Length: 306
Ligand SMILES: NC(=O)c1ccc[n+]([C@@H]2O[C@H](COP(=O)([O-])OP(=O)(O)OC[C@H]3O[C@@H](n4cnc5c(N)ncnc54)[C@H](O)[C@@H]3O)[C@@H](O)[C@H]2O)c1
Image (cartoon, rainbow, N blue to C red; front, side, top):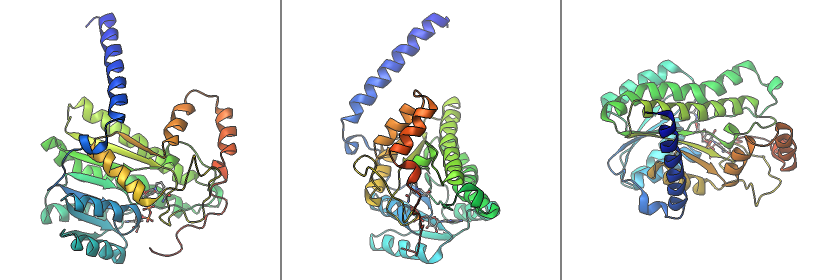
């Protein structure tokens, strides 16, 4: 196609998609949600926090749940909650920092249950120390759990999705995957990686014309699950510490509507847009003003299992 004609076509497409996005923003998610009843959903880190809440929500929608976590006890509690909802979950104890365990457990899942339709890469850890105070092993583990595990689970389960041209990968990243934060260097690096991984996968599926395989990346600010116990926010109206149920509901809405990226609270989308157009030094001053660089000053982290 002539490049001028192609430019005009692309401009029309961009304008159309902008308009579509604006119109869709006013239509409640429930009116444009896909049906996931009967689908097999694998949730990593299902033993507490978001993983547990997401498992419950998928079970309520009639999905078959596969739970993965290193915390066998927490996962048993989640499984019990699911059974009370009439679901029949299968739980696997697996350390996601170990590639071979991921591969072996994935093979076991395929033997026990078959292919996975929705893969939720949720498990995550945080060291919460200044970079030079982080032990090498903890930095390595953060990268292994927060991003390398996403690579390995995708390698295990996405070929089946591509073959069926049906599936959904949900990568739980963070607002720390959009903006760097003082005291979270290794965590931010792992979450920036998760955002880039999700976007690149989406591009690969597009180039393969696999329109039935979707990805959604989740970028929330701090959530009150205990993982970031002690963090503080300067302007709670603009950047609140988020309620876990609100985050879980927003993730489910994002998945059911095939949304590409979910940023919570909405102010995070503004940060992402602003970053590309203001001078870097302005961004640093604004980050200090909004208190983002002091959020970790009183960080304690998870004190006990919920
Ligand atoms: N809590 C927050 O403020 C916040 C904010 C943004 C993003 N996130 C992300 O959301 C996700 C869920 O976090 P959460 O708040 O529910 O935390 P959480 O600590 O409640 O849950 C994390 C789960 O991952 C599991 N896990 C940790 N290491 C593992 C390993 N090696 N193998 C298997 N499982 C392992 C834990 O046992 C736990 O059940 C994480 O990826 C986190 O980075 C959290």
